[in-house]
Image (cartoon, rainbow, N blue to C red; front, side, top):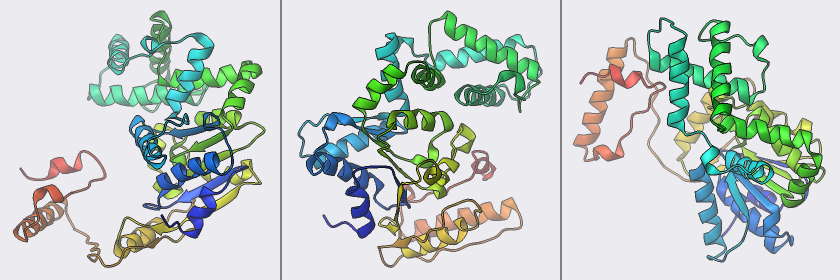
Length: 355
């Protein structure tokens, strides 16, 4: 398979830190799996010393399957996993945690629901409040914030503190840990036990992180600890695709990576193999208005395509009517409904469409 110049530079990079800015459809999964093979077959790295971190189990599974196909089905013990699965594995070895110690999501929701009900507050939308407070508690924990100096966006500080402390007490009483604990406990373990950290540094000598724009502060700190003196940290991401700030993601980590690692090599994967030129061009025109970003120009490899239309409507009803008309137009043209999609910014917007 032929690779472009930027892909070759990323794939064949062996020692030291690297930042790979991967535009949409640029083949980032291809680069990660091919670099993994290159490290093994060309650089002589033992597969067990390679760690590939993704954000979701689905992404980890896909990455592993893509690599397995690349290696023609042979068993190669590269470590693929999510941040949480990798960090939980470290905690399991240190503290003996098992799967039953992980708090299930339905239990977590029940804990919070009972704690909120105890506060005897007047709440307009209980589900919305529950979701918001759970998210806030998660951010406070994962960012190791001082609770005494935190001001809640959803309720009075005293009530938030009661909910937070009550939740922590329930976790400890039930001998459970949640997903935020996996990060915090792992961070504290490495801080307190340099001998244990050294052992994991010896195991994970080459670390690759997918979707680097979605990484949060504590995930990055632990990853830097693991990279240690070898500094073989390979981060793939795109600051333009960061959409998870509300979950604690910090795209600034990508922007500041070369400050943390001054010797880091930066590569831009600027070829889009997925979309037609019209889409790539208009997406670039829109995203360039972001003030804090890496300047980049992405080019489409495919040719042709349908022109992009930009329309403004004076009212929501006018916009909805146009959407309905367009769907009808496409259907009459023989396009099945299954091939149409209407994207919205929020979940409430589609509810405004007439039945």
